[in-house]
Length: 85
Image 1 (spheres, rainbow, N blue to C red):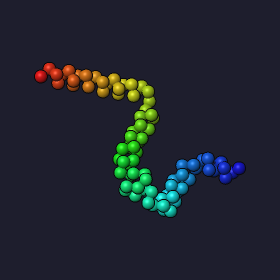
Image 2: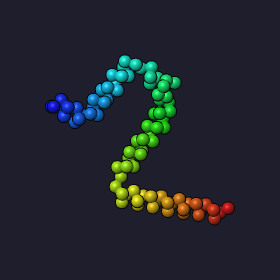
Image 3: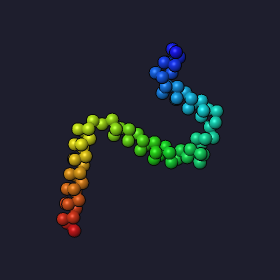
Image 4: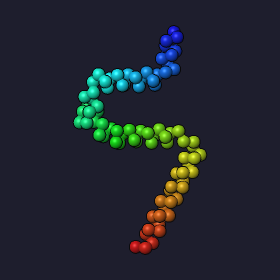
């Protein structure tokens, strides 16, 4: 039972060790042009996932104020840009 508790506590570290061991045993999976397509997954999917997780951790009040501020800046920029045409 103690081993199971330890595995639940350190599940992330165990996952990292397993991923590194898997990469050591079969490196052809992660090579450029391989099945994982790291040139796409690292460039786009990993970056998008990081930003998405960061957005999920924002407090609601902060996110609402930032959304309102960015909408105001977009609208004012759009309106001022159309004045000169």
